[in-house]
Length: 268
Ligand SMILES: [Zn+2]
Image 1 (tube, rainbow, N blue to C red):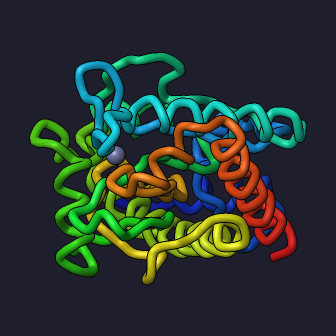
Image 2 (image 1 turned 180 degrees about the vertical axis):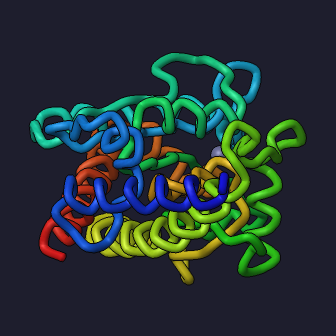
């Protein structure tokens, strides 16, 4: 009995979202909005500058901190997106604050984000290599390098998934299955837009779209990607990443890819 009621509730819920979005496909991230019968006029983009506070992230050969470059670049992206008037932008942090990866995901979900974009800079053993890359979630990292990166970003305290204990198991299973499938597809769409736009203006690593088990990308209902905007292990790229014009160049490409993504969604 309980099960039937639950299933019916879920189906009603899905129908309401389809009607609210005007699409047959369910748009993840609209969950909370549709549930409260309020569809936000603007898309909500959550930007997540990596690291912060006691966690500096990667440290460049010249001593730059990843956390500072990530925040500066994310702030530039936020300015561009806000200026377009298409979005409401929320940063997971806007100062030098330590936030666990679990909390970053929680903040994105609290904000009812339609899209989550984590911004980082990498450091790799080969100092001659430079370029940006984009990651989407994979339960198993696509290669050893990606696995090592995911491990660096995740740290020890943050290998936490979403807390599903608040939902009835039947609801959780159905919702999560629906959400994950749709969210994964949309995350890949977003990553392709990012690679396309970034590739027009800055160097990319070979194999520029990869997947890894980043805890910060694990919101089951928010399309998510992580951008490594360059390599602090490369002296020239570290120099550029510290410069505001270069950060703006990256931000312009990232903002364009967000536009491309939502344009494609709107056209679907
Ligand atoms: Zn990082």
